[in-house]
Image 1 (cartoon, rainbow, N blue to C red):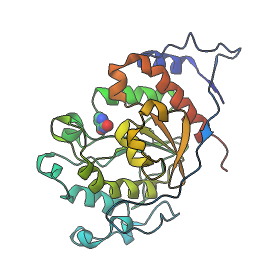
Image 2 (image 1 turned 45 degrees about the vertical axis):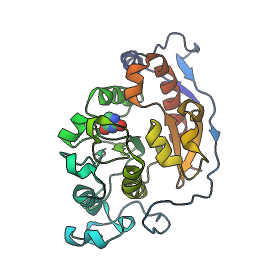
Image 3 (image 1 turned 90 degrees about the vertical axis):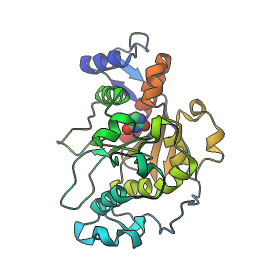
Image 4 (image 1 turned 30 degrees about the vertical axis):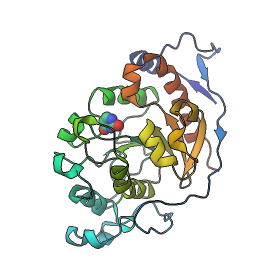
Length: 284
Ligand code: URA
């Protein structure tokens, strides 16, 4: 795939710290990306605690089908519509993080496709967990790492605030919906308890592509399809397209890591080019 960069995108990449001058010069100022190696979906075995039916193909469930909050506890997360799911996250007390959180952080991005419907998002960005700012504001990626993420999105011509064309709309969420105290790493039990929320969000959003940012997002999304994914360094997982419940997944570094490891920003840009190529490929 060849990606044409205009001056604005070059400026955004410069802001990300990604140099574009050394990239293969093409007559049309193009960046060439390598062809993705597709990884066939493995037969996914679900490990979450809720017995869930196969992911329904329908992207959205009308509000009328959403249960009132009072009955959410007895409803499997896999059955909830978008608004009921958000309420369910807000009310969740499944792990100890509920004791220290100020807000749950459900996600942000493209507006709902209609009353009671999930957003219509082509791109799903999956991060790790809310930090202090996210906990205070109830929105993912609003701190320094979030500013870098916004610049990365801008460099691709995307924005979390875009209201216009549904094509290339974005939704951003985290694997964990509550802040781990002191921004410590998520614990296995917390990831397990939160997994059904992520799973249901993806089932309802039905994005064209998922970008998994950082170790915990990658492990959560690929644990059923990549054997021993937790023991494979993220750098070794890059450069391929994986599959999460029929949706292509691209692996890249977490923006917070990129803030500390400037040299990896060019690799992250290569990952985003891989994702762009896959997202814009005609439907199979
Ligand atoms: N890091 C994440 O993974 N998510 C956020 O929302 C903020 C920082």
